[in-house]
Length: 180
Image 1 (tube, one colour):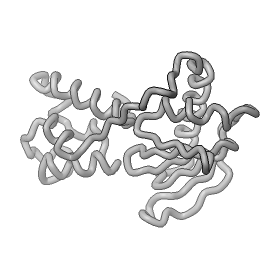
Image 2: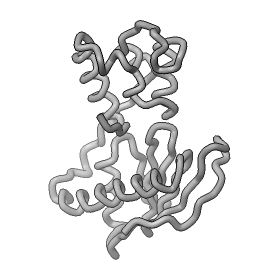
Image 3: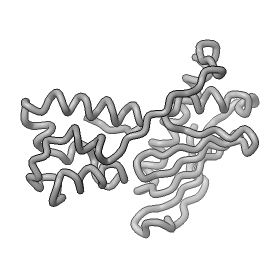
Image 4: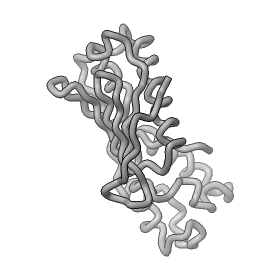
């Protein structure tokens, strides 16, 4: 079961915290690290150092082969627990899918830019999200300061259903998570 080991002040944002947590791992977790990394979009695996690191919004998360997980820019303890539980699910999935994952093939990385996000926004500059422009919203969305649901027209107006689905797919492929 995931647990919090330490909560520290965040260096980058005084309103957030850094967290050291621990997930349950098996004795062969070091061997499983490349498989776990394969299942995490845009992650980097360092065999030499024994860790996987990836970004989730503005957060930087590092999974160590001993089961320790470090996280930056975390809102609170409940968010940290949620992330640790998500990582535990990925680890379980890696064990289930180990024989299906071909580590010899290069892992495709999907990168999302501000312009990629902007292209799938309504471009109305309506300010309903709290930002002056859709471009400003796109920047804050990628930095983890806004949630995609903050763009009200995207979710209320039927005419934006197509671009909404495309944006959600793009963000999901790049490792962003959201609840709709």
